[in-house]
Image (cartoon, rainbow, N blue to C red):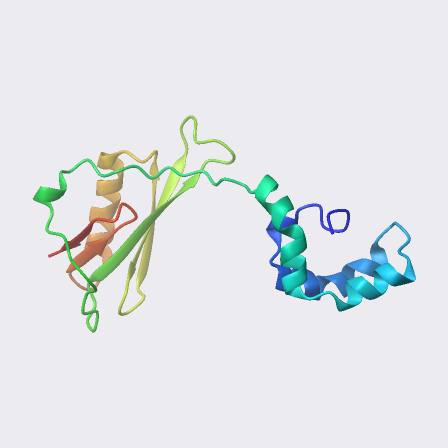
Length: 162
């Protein structure tokens, strides 16, 4: 499987199975009739089993810029369980680093806030991920929303209910 798929971690086995008939005609090495039959009849489960050790060795670790919050949790009202989101105002927030392959240096972060009920989404950008810049963008989003924020859940697993 590895000569055919040099990046096996990028495809799920189901997609790889579906792609094999498209790839094989362009494969530059001759395949024996037996190998061709095996490739035509292999299941996604068998592909998973064969690629498991390769995927374990080549697993990519993602970059993460998420840090714990700076406010002590005792000062933030924590929402236990799930919110009743039958009305707008309960927001999910996330940030994404636009940094290429390194978290070093200065780069832009995008902040996306989505209302769970209405799916209204607002996006902003900020340099770095400092508290002042992110809070400025949250306030900008708050002013732009056609409803009040009643709850806020972010990637740092702190849920605040207003």
